[in-house]
Image (cartoon, rainbow, N blue to C red; front, side):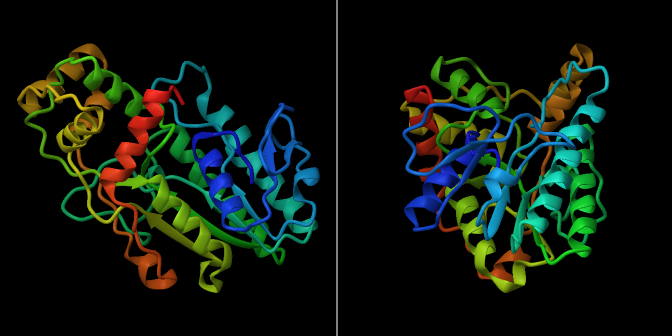
Length: 311
């Protein structure tokens, strides 16, 4: 597994090991570890990364490593950097995996390949891609490049496009939300009635597990999310319940929030907070029999536990 030290990687490695899978964790730099599975350093990720030491005797590779989405990327040429890591590094991995006789590559893509906002109907796998930023563009290009590599070899490819993932160790915007609720800061989202598809870590792990073995996963792309979307205000309230603190929500009209976002240069963040992004995960349910079995409340409780423990 690549990206084994990340938010998803740590949880997934532990879950697969506990399920009896033989796990090899590819990491960028050598580190001391008490993990019950080997950590193999591969260095920085680019077109010349040497993945082979981490591929020995591997049947399936779960590819999580990459340059993550950054809200305000200060890089002068962000797309070039995303391409170097997310596209060129992924192609190099696939080529070396094919040479090593790996059976299947599971690529963790992103719902940003589809876009950032849904209207009257949810995103599906049949929608034309519409990535909104360099990160999403690089994930789409990586998907297409990996299909090309696999078409020339016996390596099977399964692609997962998750929505925002929550659970133990969550960072980024979810960390900021937990801090705000925990400190009693007022949040101007009481009037927001949007719908956002989220994905609990337990449900993501279940999707990866079924993709490891199901024949129908080969050559397929799946959008994955919990069964029921939630609003931004519902998410804040649930975080408050788990923290044991009430979420202080102010009913500011959405139009005023968007105006304030435009005036302060935060339109993208405000639009993400107030708009809807809903995913139809029926394809993976019907094709692979996957179900979102881990309750939303438990995933939020796990996330808050990680926050409390400083994970």
